[in-house]
Image 1 (cartoon, rainbow, N blue to C red):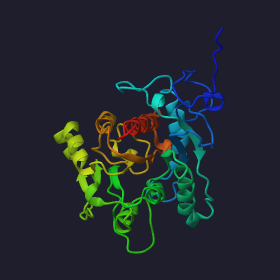
Image 2: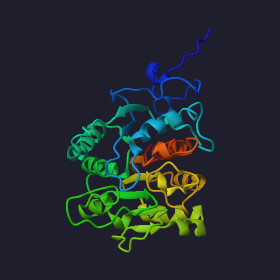
Image 3: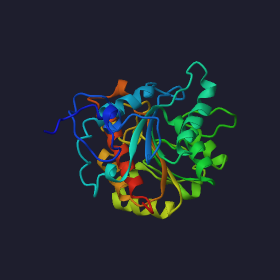
Image 4: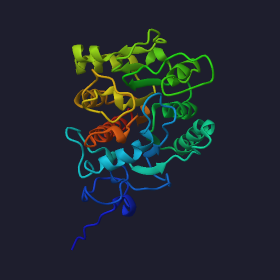
Length: 316
């Protein structure tokens, strides 16, 4: 007689495959993957980065990793609809818990995040990071640039360019891609920003497909242009949940009307299957402002689309 088990986040032995358990109970790892710090045989490690002290508007994204993990439980019983295969059949994915940093020493947080991320990817696994405010992408990109060498291409979904100029050492969640470009961490000419709908005259050379263009030209045109820009270069993928319209994602710190629907965002990501993704994050989910957990659920779905992209990368 087969005995049904729960708490796969704790008792799972095989890192592959999808095993259903009640969605309303059990240990809430991301998608019920095993909680472990052991990276042996791991393809992708999921980590949380609960930092929100770099936000310029409403705080609360420190609770984003917890909310995304909880929302993912409703999806964990089967592969998302429309995928050609279950990413967990091809990828050994674990939940490696959260990055630790001392909130009382905020100046040390960037170094701690970079060190934590590099310590994982240097062992071989890729990272899927759950924020946290968008600043966390900066130390993550630093870690990935160290690992892969040379400037990365950035695939950036957002309502904001996050390239506002800052001529001193201050970096927050609206300036970090200005710094990433200036320091050679990312190459603006081979990067694309999708969903932008706030004014910043200086694009720094980033290719921008703003939200009105997405709505006017359609998903297929966006996919074609993004593919042309990114080519086969190593890509760091970052998705600020405020890329979505507030009707789809109210639970965020800096919402902007006129954004993408969850369907548009998921369709663009799925349509980019085959690009050379090397790292990925979902950021700015702030559950205190959410309604019915729809923002956290969108974040969980988008994270799964990222795993599908990673499973479809060249040579996999």
